[in-house]
Amino acid sequence: MTAPSHKIGLSVRGATKVYPGTRALKEVDFDVHLGAVNVLVGENGAGKSTLMKVIAGVEQLTSGEILMDGQSVSFPDTRAAAAHGIGIVFQELNLFPNMTVADNIFIGREKTRASIDIAAQDQKKEAADLLKRLEHDISPDALVSDLRIGEQQIVEIARALAQDARILIMDEPTSALSAAEVEILFRVIDDLKKRGVGIVYISHRLEELIRIGDYITVLRDGMRTGARSMEGVDVAWIVQNMIGAATKDFAKSVEHEFGDEVFRSEDVCLVGKTGKFVVDHVSLSLRAGEIVGIYGLMGAGRSEFFECIMAQHPGCSGSFFVEGKRLDEPDVAGRISRGLALIPEDRKTEGLVQILPVRENMSLSSLTKFVKGIHLSLRQERETVGKFVRDLTIKIASMENPVSSLSGGNQQKVVIGKALMTSPKVLLMDEPSRGIDIGAKAEVFRTMRRLAADGLGILFVTSDLEEVMSLSDRIIVMSNGRITGEFDGTDATEEQIIAASAIGHAPTGKTGYTNGRKQG
Image 1: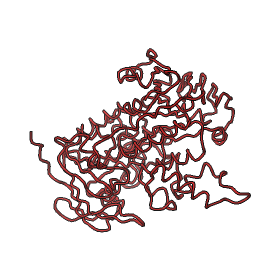
Image 2 (image 1 turned 90 degrees about the vertical axis):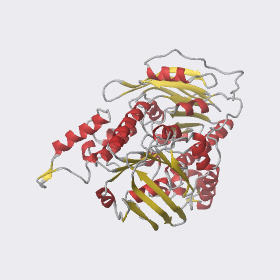
Image 3 (image 1 turned 135 degrees about the vertical axis):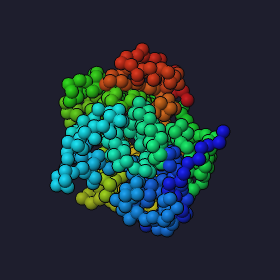
Image 4 (image 1 turned 180 degrees about the horizontal axis):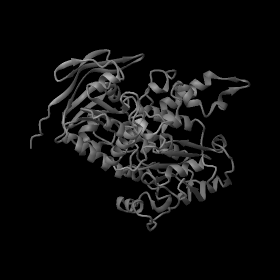
């Protein structure tokens, strides 16, 4: 069967983009077909986001050109790109937290009454219609700062839809969405295709790309390594062109003995704004050297539970213990001093200081280790940061460059490095692979396995079913704030985990170990 032909609405030819110390794009050609999903894939740092920023007018090419309908065009800024019908959903959310949902959706394109004042009611109505189209009941009057990261992602998508774009770029649009929300987005994409919109779709979820893509372009180290119609493309072909090897295996388990209990929670509860339990009597334990995955969809209470552990909700009740001793420290710094470290879901606002260099971001939580008398040993700090940069294979030109200059995946690895530099006994990881490509994900997971083998207890949250099954020694499922299932990582099935996450209660699966040994 021959793939359908779609008109090319935009082309990039010979795109080269040079930043100080790095060449992000090298003579890249790229076509956007109208009425189709144009998949763009590559490892973090491959140049995907840079190419999209060029098309959206955020960045300008060092050399090369952009063509629309065969004519050379220039996008000196985002307004120029928008005037040509180009919209973008950025990987890193670009919302104003102190403004309402409606104001964010129409920022820079406000509806006015006779050009005198803003037609606020008209904006609210259209915002409500857009959110309804995305099958969400988020209030247009809600402050963005009050929304969870997944809801903010929905607002970002709604803002792009409001532009009525001819070409819509979606850079990791599902990274913070639940499985149900992903299905809604795919229905919206199908509708946009029927209207003739050309969609550029970037995601590290390879199965997702195969499902919805019509055309695919692969980048590696700033160069195009493959471009074709999606017909006949499989995961092995994508990975081969991404990293030069036809494998996407996660890190394999390293067999080792578990140690004593290193962390325990007892009857932890947190009441939300609606008066209902967000975290509902959660009790669990973690042993040294064990990796426990908490699986659940958005709203299951997973992130809130981690926030309770790190003393971010003074109103939570219940008890926590580290190595058998009660955790009473009332603030984050105190919890870190007791051996806890959290890698937050939203790295941009909660994990990093964007204007600071990589070195200062990574050492921010462990500065006391580098103090000699009344001075900070910059030499020791640089050496230690350099070691973690190498261990985590963070791609940087210099550790003195601002962390904002890194790709999303490399920023995530900086957050992980910052946490590990505190020498934690318990590592809490909230969606550790969000926005990370398959190569970077494998590197992070190998690091997790190595740390566990060295005796670190790791508790991580994920909504990726394959991830939780591949990495966990034990799997805990949460739904509506409660633990609804617990399974041994070697015996769990997808059906059991999905059933436990989809209903309010589920029978507990097999737990425990064979002679205290983790089976790989």
